[in-house]
Each structure stands twice: as C-alpha cells, then as structure tokens.
Length: 441
Image 1 (cartoon, one colour):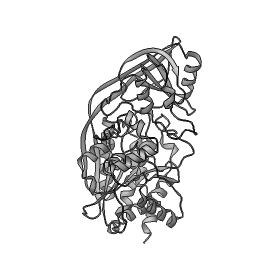
Image 2 (tube, one colour):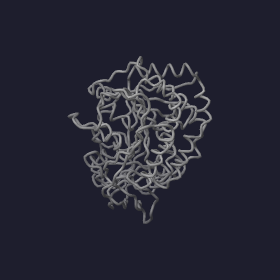
Image 3 (tube, one colour):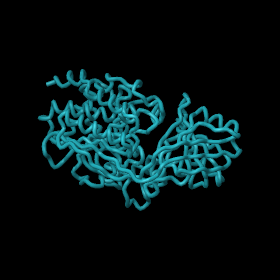
Image 4 (cartoon, one colour):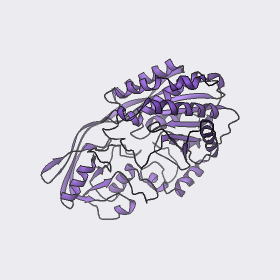
C-alpha cells in the first residue's frame, strides 16, 4: 500500500504547525512562548493520532535577555548577549583570536576582551563549538568574550554559554555581526573595549511533550525534536521545522500504525538551546536499555537531501541504505559522533543507536541559524513532505522485529570521541567529565 505517500505529499499538517510555531513571538527556553509552543504541539500530536499525549514539566536555570553593547573608541557597537552570559560589564584590551582554534588561546590573555569567529577553517579537522571557545577564553584569563559571525549580512549570532556545573558563565559574552567584528578588530585591536550585558537570571521551568503510537512493547523508538528557539528570531529552521516534522511523521504513521512492531514515542524537548536540558531530563528518568533507537530531527528539511549522523552504528547505515535505494533518493551518511543535539544523552549514556537527521549543506556552521534571519521564508512545504515520506519509511523499518540494532558500551562512544578529536573539547565544557561519571547537560 502506498496511499500514505500521496496523502503525505499533499499534507498541510506539518507546515501549518510550523507556521503556528513561528508566529509565537518568543520560544526561548523557560518562556511563556515556549510553553505555548508545547501546548500547541501536544494538541497537534493528539489530532494527528498520538495517544497518552501529555506535558512533562522540569526546572531549568532561567535567563532573560535585556540590553547589551560593545563600547570602543568612544562609541557603542551593536551586539546581542549570548544566553546565560552573566549580567555584568567588563573592560579590557581587545584581542583578535581569529578562528579561535585551541592553539590561538596559548597566549597571555589576562584581562583581555577576546574576539573569535563563529567558524573554523575548512582545513581544520573538526568543528569547534562556541562553548569550547568560550571556556578556553575563560581558562586563558580573558574577562570578556565577543563571538563574531562569519556570515555576511549584518547578523549577530547567538548561542548559549556556561557549563553543567555553572550554567551562568564566568565572563560576559556577546555576539556581533561579521561587519561589526571586522570593524572592531580593524580600528580598536590593542585598545580598551567594554562588554556590557544585561539579563534577568533566576529560576524557570520548561517542558517536554510526549505522545505514543503503535503496540505496547517493552522496547520503544524515540522520535524527537526541540521546541525552543532563540528569542531573536522565528526559529523556523532551528528548530520549528524539526517539530513540524515530528507532527507530520505522527500523521503519516497513523496511516501505517498496524505495520508498527515496536512502540514509537514522539518527544518534543524543551530547553535544548541552553544545554540539552529537556533530553537530559528524559534520559535521566527512563530505562535506556528499553530504547531501541532515537531519531532526532534537528536541522532537518532545510534542504532536500537528508544528512544523517549515524554515530558509527552499522545497523543504522543498513536501514538508511534501504530507504535511499527504495525511493531512489540520496541520503548523506556521517558515521561520526555529533554531541550537540538532543539525541546525544541517549547515545552517550545508554549506547542507544542514534540518528541525528539534518540537511546536507555546502558549508560548515549553522548558516542562517542562531541569527535574526532564521525565518519561515527560507523553507518550503515540498521539502518537508518529501523528507517526511523518507523518515516515515525509516521509522517503520526501524520498528520491525527483524531490524536488529545493538547498544554500545559508553566506553566505545568515548573512544570514538577521542579518535575524532572531540573528547578534549567536551571535557573542557563539562559535557564529558574526566572521570566519566556524570551526565551530559
């Protein structure tokens, strides 16, 4: 039966939910808007055919943006505070560290305000996350952190800082556009500069949205996304589209529910953008041995070709190959570890076979993501529908009893991180303690 394909290819369910999400003014973690998005997603999953639909509320570190600035040369330069920056002002010598590679921090940075790029050069062997650059700046003695976008267009980047142990960072941090960053470095490097951050810091709550479909089995497949978005933009790509995909998948699987041999649990996580808080909360409370696989939709359907991090699980490669062959549709497989989205607590702590579904792009980094340009006009319904057809078939195959997937020991996951040069950076930001004893946050 292929009727479900035609229905999904003409469906408006996911796209209408995406429009609903982006029309919420602010989906920042812990905000009223994030809760509104959660309630809307709960209702959409119920309407799509999900059962046991509910919200699971949990506590998080609260942070609300106020004003920020960089001051140099007697004038104010436009910036935005990075979430979980402390609400402080600091002054120091402006120092340009270029791409912010680890070796760039091997300098006397005591008392300095450092400027680092949001990207790394193509020749470098790995991507360096913003939080790693921030922590290296703190360790080197910097008193302020300026995160400079590498994308043209006067777009200041955002993104959280801090560690699991200290969610509010040690030094003030702001994002500036490529153009502002270039001007600051050209005119004021070696001169005093001031970083000013205003924010409300306190306690807050977030929530995960749950729904289930299929038989009542001991094992479950998690199908996930995240609800929250940075408050400076619509959050269409990151990650309204991912949550729209989850809703569309629920509608498609409802037409194939009798084919499911393993229960599917849909979870739209809260508070991903400030440290994977929702997925960590879920991973802490469940028996990870019961999770057959986690399929995380974060960055999916931005472009037409799906890109899938498989984290080295061979069974996942096999299923993706079958989907690509059946539909004559390319799927890019990446066997490496990707520790910066909601699948990761399940992969690291439980050795759960994890897929992180994204879209193939021409360059490193988030593109429009984490800027004011993350808006609905850059997406299209066709890509959502095509991707939903592929992922629906993927989930049905994963749910079959004959599809054998095996968990891996945590030591193997850590060994893979070490081979890929990622373990040191994760240890630095507190996401992989040296003793290996605590969870990722």
